[in-house]
Length: 63
Image 1 (spheres, rainbow, N blue to C red):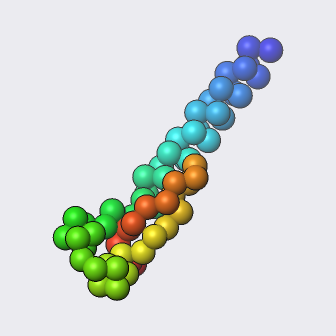
Image 2: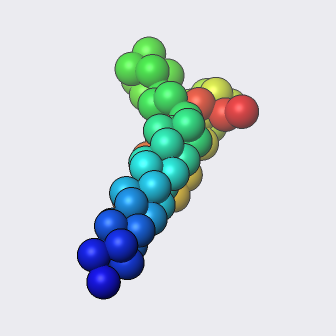
Image 3: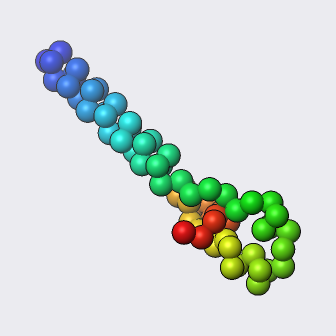
């Protein structure tokens, strides 16, 4: 019984670690302030509006 609890808790920690690493690794940089002050057309040339999980949208640099 205790062995099953330890294994389950370790598995949960590993899953949480993998998800956290995925979010950190796939986090594009925010659009710089200089680009945010440009006009809309110029801003769209260097930045794009992307969905960033949990219902949030952000301006990020184009890849």
